[in-house]
Amino acid sequence: MELSILLLLALFTGLLLLLARGQPRAQGHLPPGPPLPFLGNLLQMDRKNLLKSFLKLQEKYGDVFTVYLGQRTVVILCGTEAIREALVDQADAFSGRAKIASLEQSFQGYGVIFANGNRWKTLRRFSLATMRDFGMGKRSVEERIQEEAQCLVEELQKSQGTLMDPTFFFHAITANIIRSIVFGERFAYKDPEFLRLLDLFYHTFGLISSTYSQVLELSRDFLQYFPGPHWQIYKNVQEVSAFICRSVEKHRQTLNPSAPRDFIDTYLLRMDKTQKSDPDTEFHHRNLILTALSLFFAGTETTSTTLRYGFLLMLKYPHIAEKVQKEIDEVIGSHRPPALEDRAKMPYTDAVIHEIQRFGDLLPVSLPHLVTKDTHFRGYIIPKDTEVVPILSTALHDPRYFEKPDEFNPDHFLDDKGALKKNDAFMPFSIGKRICLGEGIARAELFLFFTTILQNFFVASPVAPKDINITPQESGVIKLPPVYQIRFLPC
Image 1: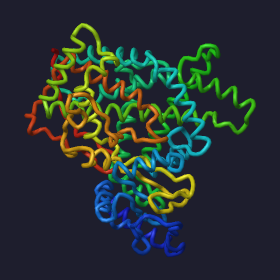
Image 2: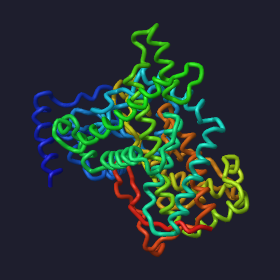
Image 3: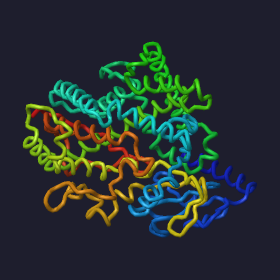
Image 4: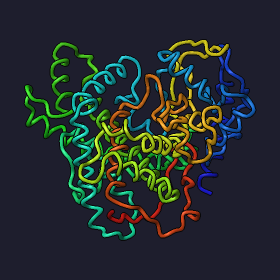
């Protein structure tokens, strides 16, 4: 009821503004999808499920179409080919980042994920190089994940097979990996500060995926001025930022220029060096805090949620879990921990993890892009600064690339000889220049955590497999697996 009132208020306010300003100007030659008078396509959008609305419009207009959300012109990309043609073949033109209503107050264009132009290029180049030095592409990240996985095994053994919600542990292990790279240390699982951070991450992720956030995205020019969950998101981000500020200050006090320990040390050294010669440098305190926050939040929530979905699917399809465990027994055995080099010898397990990511479809609607210049695309002309939203779900469920796109089937990633096969429609981390910064770390975490757990435990549910619900709680801009109970029974 409250949402309906807010939406009506937003539409009424928007109508008055549109009458004053006139219609949105569609410069260039945009893809089809003409607006309704004054309100554009707002009334055609399902405020509880944006993805569903976009899929309906795809049926009518094809893989590339335009929606008008009040004064905003947004080009939607659907299907593997259209998304690849834009984000890969014309990567520079589609590399801008548009605003996200629920997060704009918190980031305001700072930090590596939400930056544009030279700021984004500078921060991305630095972040990729530094994360590579402190983990991604080095053996050290594998060792960190293996150590964290063994800590998890010890904790799960203490449960003695009792029913539990695995959410906390999956959050904890993924948060500790990114924390070790960015902050140079890990938390004990019962550390009060750690528990508070995990709680903030979990609830913020839930707020971003909520119905209200979808309504806010549709009507952000109006609703952002009214109280709502986006204000709570801002408060949560401020609290996490305060934690990062304290950590940065500790790093500053113990900084050794000849031996940087982590991402923060490396950034501080670069900041000290560049600020002396370049007063307009992007290496300043605000970008440090919001880049560290972005890496910490994104590196925790997406991977932990994928693991939650993965083990729910193992409960739903126990025969698949059994085949994974058989491959673990044959390749790794029980006397050593899984290693990344094992992945090449375990095509079935690798295919299962790929299928978990595909079927889970965690981010069905990509973070919005901006075109950086007037762009010719598929016979259309998309004006500079137009928002572009790739619907990644339409690639991950593309029937031209997946035989049974709505079914969980690891065979989607296996050839007729049982070897892992590449699929151009597989893009859970997005693709192109805005691909997830932590893709390499996330892939390593998923393989090592998944195999370590199934090496040491059988998983069981109090519910019969046929009765297990795998329908996501939200299916708009973010998909979250339903809450479930699981037993980890020592092998």
